[in-house]
Image (tube, rainbow, N blue to C red; front, side):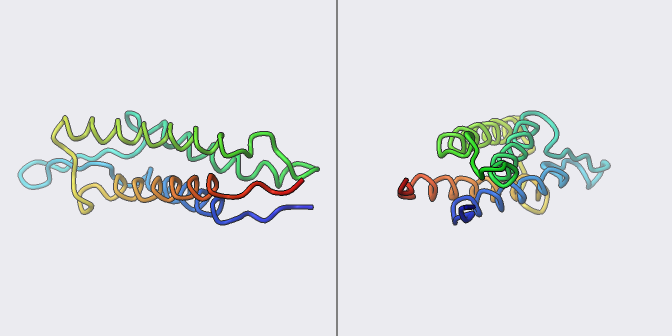
Length: 138
């Protein structure tokens, strides 16, 4: 019997999708007044780690639905916690890199960075929901 997705897993899935959507948007933009604007997206620096983890989160969510017995050994709170921690760490590293280069921008100059942050906050919220769940009775 298949178990429902649950609030935590739904939040993680939505957060991962939002994070993936943020990858193609500019994570920084410099110039634009006297010089031509230059921008970069989430596929630069440690942003690529955020991309890979978002895909892994979606894969871990889909695994129970792809197996015959509706179970996956990866569908555990520890897996979601570890992946979320890796993604958040990589995101913070990227933000610090952009800040140290002096190109950390507001949402109008870096919409992808801010959208990625919102997506990762949704993932963190989902992980907190999963950690707060009561274990299912055997």
